Length: 318
Image (tube, rainbow, N blue to C red; front, side):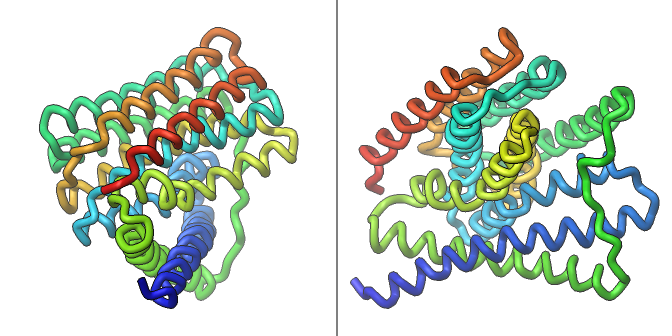
């Protein structure tokens, strides 16, 4: 095994993640500035541009993987991120600080997250691939979900102050948007190439495993940073809504967009998808009963992720 080649590809993965995250930040800032200048309400910007931006790393990785024929990374990235977002990120945040959960999140958003996860599971098992028809279904559901969010936000008089819009000049906007997209695309290519090489030549595992672990963790970094920042500011309850929204966007937007470009084989992801659904239910139960996520639930989530990770290690070989 060529040590220098391995180090080079590990460097590709790290550099790719940095480009993905910073590229998404720049794109969101640029696009939000345009929307602000056009007079679009901040709450709408937050529910659309910012939401798409936080899912940009997953989208870039999954689309790039699908195009390159690495379907295992494409689906593994989405399913792995959704599992990690709930069991690891929310579990860790709940252990540190009790998370209050909004009624609408518990009664509408969480059940909807479970439903779209079940659709992914059933379609994959029945048809053996995630393809164009379900991609269209995902996009229809996505548009409907965004419309619901906007209508609900206006009815509930949601605050616009959560979204910071930078006042950029025209040339800065162009640099932010074009540069952000370029960084996302280049970063996704680096990450997929590096991860595929390391998976096959160092760990001798499948694309599925690398997508469920390393790539999933890297693309979940924005959600992790959001949750940590919210907890530090005493707004840890915001983390729940962000994570649930991110998981919904991961399936409907990220995977939905990927399969509109190229179908992705589903084989091997049934158990992982069941774990993702189980994680969503594990989050939903205390939310619907107590309207909060405490240290006990957080501990159960972390232990559940530890058990799942052990399962991945045991079944890691390609």
